[in-house]
Image (tube, rainbow, N blue to C red; front, side, top):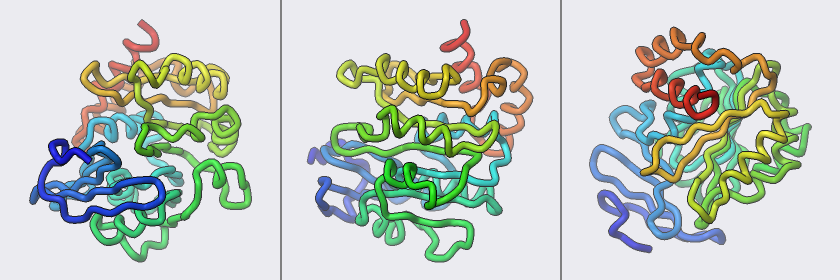
Length: 261
């Protein structure tokens, strides 16, 4: 572990079979790190429903196309940033969370303000691919978010073709899928993006945040009509920006430039 990458004081340092886990706190923000100081996610202690990390905000651009979800599946719990946002933004929404690491679930309760009891929140200790493949685990979802990492980057099993196709089948009509990937040279993002496009019948868009970030979000759509006219969503993006203080118009613009220009 390189402590130079850790912001604030380390308040928990532990290890499970998958590797190191670090929780750090700078007084205002609490963060979860994997491996060699790789930031997984953060929450603001005074406002846990606010999304701190840019890639989390970019993932929630799914709301531009599905602004009032009734059911969300999140694969990868991490530091609870997405869970805390969803619980506060959509208190009536059914939220299922799948996390493979028992220790991460324990830390979420101990350090990241995940509620012990919420009728709409279910936590499943399981591998994401197993959960998706077992239809009896649940129904379909308006939004599926995949943000699952290990010490080497995005979980390899969650970009396999069988998993991606099965995930598409778990979307409701006009449902949205979003996955957080990395775009380092060794990650071969062009190959992964081509696979995602194939799995979703070419109904996919990429969202590269900037050259300064590894994170690249890919959206998959249950149908082809949802995203064909991106400029038509500008009023929705502006409304969502005012409501959640996230620059959705910027992400919508990036989606247009990076996929249609």
